[in-house]
Structures are given as C-alpha cells and as structure tokens.
Length: 269
Image (tube, rainbow, N blue to C red; front, side, top):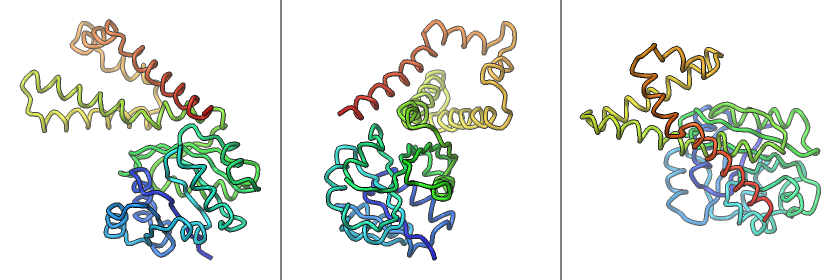
C-alpha cells in the first residue's frame, strides 16, 4: 500500500521538498497533501505540482502516514496540540525546525510517537539539497531508510547523532546564505573591474558549483585542491594572501559558530 505524505506549512523549504518528491516520482501526486493558512502559496503548489492542498491542518494529520512539520519553531507547540489526537498510530513525524529537540516534540505530543528530526537546506529546490537526520527510539531501521529515501529525492542525506544537529544547522542548513553572499561578492569584484553583471554572476556561480563538485567527486582535501590552483608567485596565491590578511577563514568559522550557538539557544527556550 502506498504511503501518504503530508506537509503542515508551505514555506520555501516545504516547496523545495514537495518539488523534489513529485519530480522524482517517489510518491504519486494523490498521495501528497499540504496545508497552509494563506491561499497564494497553496495555489502556486497546486498549479505547479498538482498535489492535494487545504487550509485545514487536521485534514493533513488524518491523511498522513508521514507527516512533515514545515512550520516555524514557535508554532510547534500550538500546531501539535491541535493534531496530536488525530494522527494515525504509526505515523512518522518529521521535524525540519532548527533548535527543536526530539525530547521537546515528544513532550508536545505527550504520548508515544515516531519522530525524526531533520535539517534540510534550500538547494533542495534544484535537487542539490544537503539533509541530516536523527530519530527517537520508536522509529525502526526500515522507517529511517524510508525517510532517507524521501530526502534523497532532492539531494544528499547523512544520519547523525542528535547532539550534532545544531552543528548541522551551521554547516549546511544556514550556510547557503553565506555562499550566496560569496557569489555576490565575487561578482561585485568582477563588475568593479568592468565585467557585465550577468556574466559576472554566471561565472562566479559556476566556479562555486564546479569547485564543490571537485571536493565531492575527487575526494581530495580542500586545501590540496586550493594548492593546485596556486602557482608560485601567481595571481591566485596573491589573492589568497589578501583573503588571509582579512581573516577570511576566521570569519567563516565565526559565522558557523554563532549559527550553532543561536540554534542551541532556540532549543533552550
């Protein structure tokens, strides 16, 4: 029997995940439902992907064998309180919220439930997401594999210990924003020197994409790949020297650090 998969909330992350799931044909359109309080997002999703849409969270809760809570962390308690008595006995609850622990979600449901905590990222919209997940004791290995397959529909997946989930938020959940800033800065530098902006964005973005693939596909250390670009007394090593003088790597490390600290603080609240 086909599983039904539901989303409560229709933000950017939910749209990215739904796109990956439907495009990959992992689930049929009639087996996917999403709820949202506002209609424009639902109309967009229905027109683009042809899945079931509703304004009623309770309808999603009753329908779903796999239920994804794609809502803001501060909405979790309220939403869970309204649906907890309506979910099916073996429904797998998937959280995508930063800073919300499995223990907190268990307390909100106030009964035995299957919970998988995840941290995806927005490149899922183009099938290149990076997601990490962990689960509570009620989820068996087959169910973890089932959820891994869902997230592989729009990128790569790693299973990690829950103690590392806040770190995941810093290294892959939030970091696309850092990369976009880097691409924009690269392009701005090129525009400063006379390159048309459209060409600058294309060249900068492709350089980042190609460099990332080099790390993933060659298995080489990023430092080794960097060294291979830096000819003695050449242009690249001169630029690397400039970045080092301006604390480039230290700034990135600090950005990840404060992101992790923020995620932990959200969880403590």
